[in-house]
Amino acid sequence: MNARLAIVDDDPAFTEYLQTLLAARGYTVDAYHSGPSLLEALRAGPAPQVVLLDVLMPGLDGLQTLRAIREARPDTQVIMLSGRRTPATIVEAVRLGAADYVLKPGDPDGIGEAALESAIRNALEREALSAEVARLSARLEEEPDGAQTCWASGASMQPILAMVERVASSDVTVLLHGESGVGKEVLARELHRRSPRRNRPFIKVNCAALPTELLESELFGHEKGAFTGAGTSRIGKFEVADQGTIMLDEIAEMPVALQAKLLHVLQDHQLTRLGSNRPVDVNVRVIAATNRDLEAMRRDGTFREDLYYRLQVIEIHVPPLRERREEITLLAEFFLTKYAGVYRRPAMRPSPALLEAILAYRWPGNVRELENMMKRLVVLQDEAFVLAEIARARPEPAARPVNGRAAPAASRLVPPDDDGGLGVDLPSLARAAALEAERAAIDHALTRFHWNRRKAAQYLHVSYKTLLNKMKECGISEQADTP
Image (cartoon, rainbow, N blue to C red; front, side):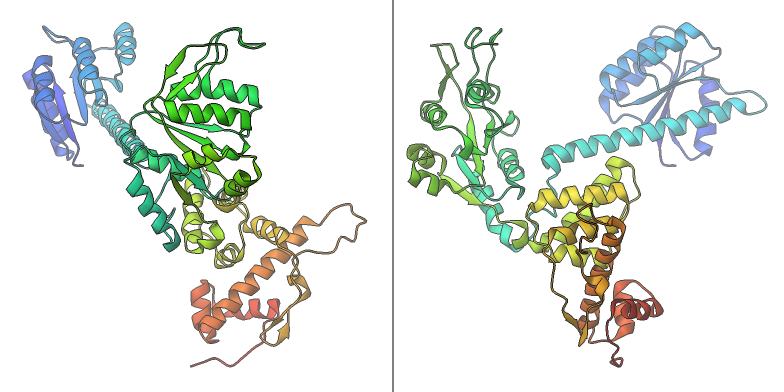
């Protein structure tokens, strides 16, 4: 089993028996005859995956040794061994973090041996789970908020990532510009992660979420009695983010009066809480983000010119997802895998029909819309609803010829509302959307393989007969196979 165990028992005969038993089961076993000898070994080298610890030992007993193990190596799994069950000892062992409490094996029927092996297997599973959690936690620290290799994998994002790498180590302000949902927050967090401030706070404030008075208090804090309802003093987000990074999202929505106070903080690295005259020093890197044209707002006077130039030391435009189509497939698969784990649903892969649909869609909501759509797909476990959703979001296309033949009536994605405005027939809409997506995928495959239907069937992961039936169902005209 290649798992490393340690036995701690003052009885040499029992230790030898247990070591022989477990070695025969494939374990690597180290033996120690006292608690201090084990603790010394833990300080000198790597910890075993599971420790089998005798409860009754002279000097440092089992519970005292367990307490010391938990302090020195808290992730080590410890199974307590005893010749008898003592409820008070069991309760204390569990309280101190023991993985299990097992009677010493040695009975003729081998029941004790089976119980011990079961406890070891369970402890190893917990140890493996703890190691995986630690690995994922470390990965999340390196790649916060789901930043993954598929994000920004396209050519259009490479210059942006290069710019992030160049400016991350400095304290210059950065202005991120792009449509809603393109990943500006992910980029801001990446700037923070690569900066010397990475171990300090990253604070995000949505400037569009609060009215002026509350936004000022949110950013700069207030003293008790500064306004109605201010029953206690409170520090603002700038003070919380001291020595770290603050992201001011939707900066264009900040009222002009508050813009002047923000400019003061950026220039002097000082702020004044509402209701106070005492300045507070802050050291914060500012990253601003917007989906509006700040240059136009500067010209028409709705955004302060001096603040604009203070924020725009480095300006990065994040392109929309429709200009990064090479990322769509990888992102879709990533979100499907992610939410299958979150919602404990079967893992899914997008079918050729769905891939065709999402690659043709314009994604007005960008990456956020794609993520939410894949989340719905995982929950519903039915592509027809997602295909129907994409169809509803697109303007109704005119029926176009398919290889010389008109598209079937079923491929019209938005059925007429014949019920006096009472609603739409969702199942029919889903079927129509699925049929349209299948027709597009088949048309693409046939064109790609020059109408070699066998190769097209292999590409679509369906049988040759199924492809012929689908071609007939979708109204795709027959042509001779290309050799």
